[in-house]
Length: 261
Image (cartoon, rainbow, N blue to C red; front, side):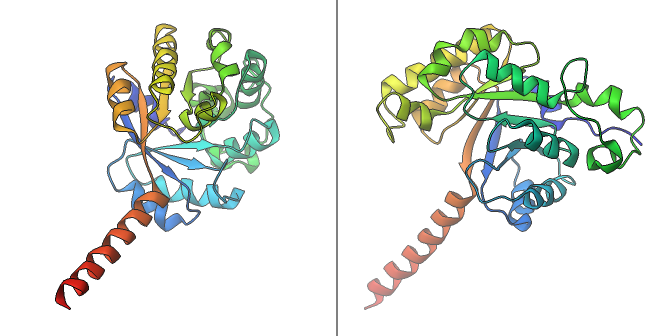
């Protein structure tokens, strides 16, 4: 049996900006609807959303039949947790709150098999290896892993060069919301100071030859990120999309009712 290819890495080779959506609702039906919507990638957010391990597995299964890349953001870089996600079949990770090269190196150790890392071996129990049915899985799995660490504090930006120099780190994802909080401008996504800090970081990531990503629904930020050749941009969140659509539908009916009175 063949090893599943990392769809995210495959799409990155197209050398265009990849558009994605955040998944925060732990219902596999939502994941499947999103999978058919036309995004390049979908991120399963175990960090902030109420996902259990079984919910992440269900999302991966719901997304798999569709031509879209699944990404997983764990709550942290705990090697035991990352091992669980790896065994489920997750291949691309965004690991939050990485402030130092030492933390980034620990993530490398967690997601790669030796000699590149220290990932534990248990393929007979792993969906990723199709329960020992993938040919030569142990020697091929590392090739399909994509490790992206998240820089979202002033400390991380100060250490960005060192983080980028860590072998095994494929890219860095900028988190504007926490970065704004770290800068003392929490909730101000359009602040020029925040935008400049993000763009400066993205340009540094690209200069280092690494993958650059960001989550933002700010149009000024999106335009600047496109101009900076950002590799992947999250532009939507399932909870917001559903909430906004519901409010819009209710508002339209209420206005119609008022106009008829």
